[in-house]
Image (cartoon, rainbow, N blue to C red):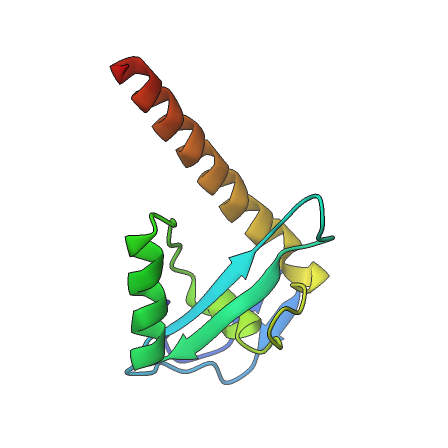
Length: 114
């Protein structure tokens, strides 16, 4: 969730012009309720100290964190509770699949201990 090297970046066809390295963190939180939402929604965003608090809260709650500066740059432009744009569906779907698999592994690990 930190800045990226100087230069342009691309995410699924969206070009981020002038995306330059920053000396501060950025963070974005997403929420997805498949029974209610068509796509994940941006529920928190911040930079600097606020980003660090978002990350710390996620860690405290056991929420997986994915570092992807270019994706954070795109998602941080959304309004609160706005659905993610179709251009980043694939990237976010890969992250959600990873999170789901982590939850499955953790659940099976705890079942074995019982």
